[in-house]
Amino acid sequence: MKILVIDDERPTLAMFKLFLAAYGYEVFTAESGEQGMAVFASKKPDIVFTDIRMPGMDGLEVLRQIRETGAFCQVVIITGHGDMERAMAALDLDASDFINKPVERAALNSALIRAEKRLERMASGTGTGEDAGDFSVTQDAGTGQLTLCFGGRLTESSEAKLDKLFTAAVPGDKVVCRFADDFSINRQGISLLVSLLRRFDGSGSHITISGLSYNYIRFFEMAGIDKLATLVPEDVEEPGL
Image (cartoon, rainbow, N blue to C red):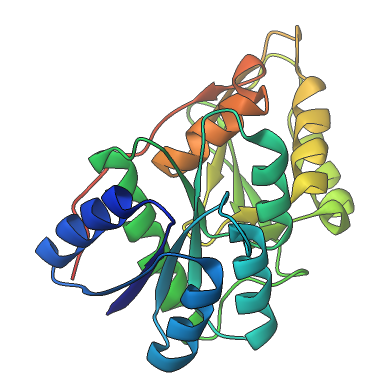
């Protein structure tokens, strides 16, 4: 599997190359967005890590141009802590995941696992798209626990489906929102999710969100969702090569 890392800081490129090569990936690097897009066109990587803030062509423009090619490539955005607005913009362009600087090994592993699983689903014809939201609800007969399952892409167009999903829960219920490997969201989807979770604020219900990547947990915390639900991090495994 081929990975391209785009960052204007050479120490960051060296760190990524060291870790990714150790995992067995074929690694390419670029020191600017313009150079990165040239490498992307010639090498056709499966996964791209790109810094969001760079002189000239920034990471958002890199993501936008990659999406315009129609490639299945997964794009992981490298952000600074608290860079909420740019992270939201990246979500609107269907970024696969986020990694904060300084990069932690667990965060890198989580992003790789998620990107690989999304690639597998897209290759099998069940990938994400603007209207690919797939939601369902199940209830445990013994405990009464409701599990709301989220797959595909959550956007403003998902409102009717999600409203019906959350209507199945009543005050006092124990509710688990479980997100699938291919889950993605945009800024309107974030607003919709926050609005629905607020229905249960102070109702006595206990809402748990599970299945999110290590990095999406941090993003949801930035969005304040951890004030409305308990965020349960996934077990971060080693990438399967």
